[in-house]
Length: 175
Image 1 (cartoon, rainbow, N blue to C red):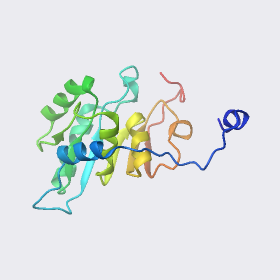
Image 2 (cartoon, rainbow, N blue to C red; image 1 turned 180 degrees about the vertical axis):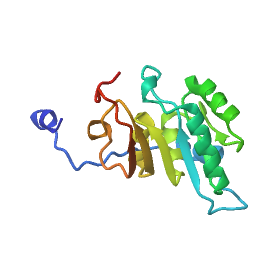
Image 3 (cartoon, rainbow, N blue to C red; image 1 turned 135 degrees about the vertical axis):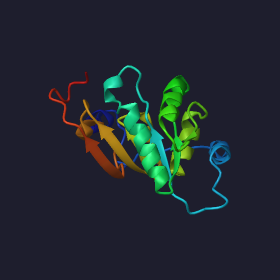
Image 4 (cartoon, rainbow, N blue to C red; image 1 turned 30 degrees about the vertical axis):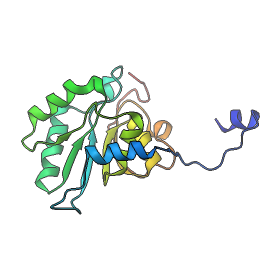
């Protein structure tokens, strides 16, 4: 991809992904996720169980997301669930499986507001998805779940965090 940019006379300045949200985006994220007044240092972990509707094979099973929610809550972590407006049902399905009542913010943000929300997380857990790139852009540590796609090809530049991979026999098969 550098070759195309060079050929077009555009110089590349490093490998960092950057976002420039507005103060309005920041205020909306603050409104959706105000600091915990009783425990301001309590860790906040964001979970993004959805992702591309066309690629459901990239998604971890909902019962496992629910177990993760409950395990984090048992350890005193504030859990926030993110997603797009089309993932409301997914969020409801997840909450039904939990005992811990995570804070669900699915469908309540624009893309830049979501980036500002992710910036408030100590860690963000997601599939190979667009919000992973937002997390890289705001510098939030991630745990990314990969199955049929290849992290060597799809991880954003300068992402900070951990990759968990499930070996799929045909990978990278995109099926």
